[in-house]
Length: 159
Length: 311
Image (tube, chains in turn yellow, cyan):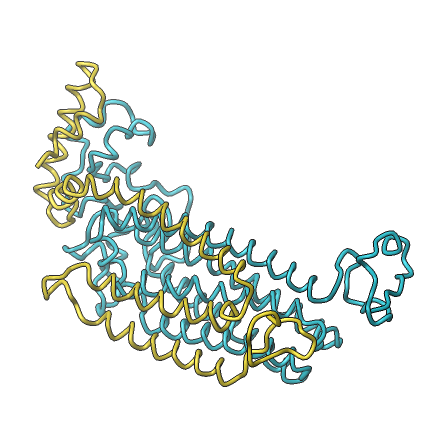
């Protein structure tokens, strides 16, 4: 904006003219980062003992790309700071939502993991049949005793 | 500075509406704004507030993605194998390039280079169309392979082009193995006859996998599926409920696709107005704000691409 120091003044004092060479540099960087993120995903960090690293690398590159788009393509680098506050606030609240939702997910992670590994693999027909019978039996018992079915299900698949 | 009085009565009552240079309002300046700059800044702030709601809209879906993936990471690692990384990467490049031409169009509009601006807008529209065409081929390929959003995506035999709604679904034909504890309590809700849970002989031996499958569907798979990629139903490593990956994939990329469509319409509108000479270095607000929307479409895809195709 014209009330901020800038070398690209617009002729009428409205908006900010970003020179094409900055736009091309930004676009080029975004394309290079796209190639990097595809290549980085081919490395399986899980084999190297850091299972979550693939996600962090991919997201870190995505955040860098998003920042380039916001700062240069969307002019926030030169814009009034209030527009940046609006964007950062919305992103911060999304981060807050996800973080709090994930505390619950992590709290029950081992239960869910054990549950999934124990039963949710196809091709394990005998195991599934056994489980199925057990579930059906438990369900029948719980109905007789007036228990909640959910409790029977949880019992049947404890670690 | 001498203040000339605006001819309109509203402005005459308001000294703030006076103009230092003494000439009339530019035609694009709404009467309730003091100056083109104020109008531009107000419009831009409004657009950023709207974009904040877009961030929150997709934020809910990203939150759902995080919870699902946190609970069942194996579904996402498995499901991503079935997405075409090459097409996804090409679409990423298409959107980035169209974002570049959009930003360039804004710069050219500000420099009063209207022909260049129109060319850049047409290129941007081409990017939007190209993205949707590639997405169309990806979606139809997935449907063809039998991956649908929904409770399960195998009730329709893969490679069958006709869907007979009268045909019994797997559980109706008695071959469904109701298996997970999470679904077991709600079997009655699914419309199963009472007692089916406890009556062992009516429960399938689950020899064809836990999701259950109508025999004709299984035969269709065996006879028609090309061998280069194992069909999920024949893949012993397939996690049950793998369809959940496709549910959230179709939901998030579908909502993004709607945004691409809307963005394309906005760009088309900008082209029509630009061709009529509505924009100049004095007035380019619609180009700028339409561009902001288009960049957000690019931003969302920058996150969707790695989350679904890569990791």
